[in-house]
Length: 261
Image 1 (cartoon, helix red, strand yellow):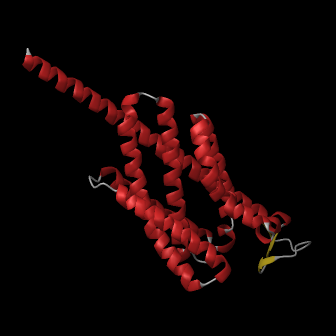
Image 2 (image 1 turned 45 degrees about the vertical axis):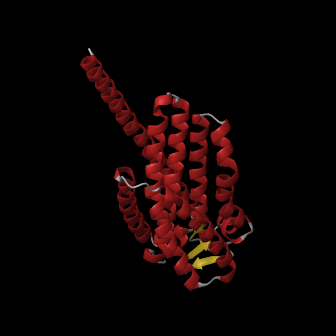
Image 3 (image 1 turned 120 degrees about the vertical axis):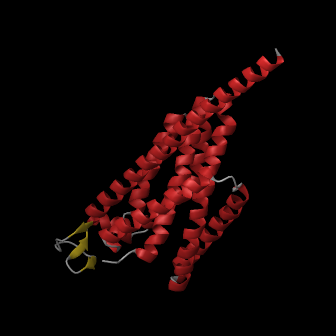
C-alpha cells in the first residue's frame, strides 16, 4: 500500500510538473509575442513620424537637414522646440510614475493597452534616428541586436546560475548611466558619449538575461496559485522589461554601427 502511495505521489508530481512546463511555455510565448507587437508598433510609428517630418520641398521650410531635405512644420515642432524635451523624457516619466499604478489597479487588458500605447509613443521619441542614420545601418544594427538578444535571453532561461545579485548591481548601473546621459546633454562630450554607449550595451545585455530568468522564476513560483489575471499582467510586465532592454541595446549599438546620412 505504501509503495502504491509513493508511486501515486510521484505520478501526481510528474503531472503537476508537466502542467507547469506547458504553462511556462505558453507564458513565455505571451511575453515574447507581446514584446514583438510592441517592437512593430515602435518601428512603424518611428518610420511614419520621420516620413512626415521631412520634405524635399524648400518652399516655406526654414530648417534644412541636408542638401535637398528640409523639416516640415511637424518636424520643426518635434525636433527644434522645447516639445522635444517632453518627447524625450515622457516615456521615462511613465515608467517611473505611471506603469506601477497601471499594473496594480488596472486589468490585464488595460495594462496591455498601456504597453502598446507606450510602444507607439516610443516610436515618436526614436523617430529622429531615421533623420540621422542610413536605413541600411538601422536595419543592420537591429538584426545584430536581435541575434544578441536571442542568445542572452536563451542564456537567462536555461542557466542554473542565480542572476538576482547581478540584476541588483545592473539596476544601480542604469541609474548611474541615466545621470551620466543627462549630464552629457549639457556637456556634449564625444568621449563621454562613447563611454556611455559602451557601458550601456553591457548593462542592458546583462539585464536581458536577468529579466528572462526573473520572468521564468516568477511564473514557476506563482503558477500554482491559479490567478490567471495576475499571470497575464506579469507576462505584460515581463514583455515591457525585455522590450526596454532590447531598445536600449539597439540604441547604444547604433552609436557604434550606425552610418550617418
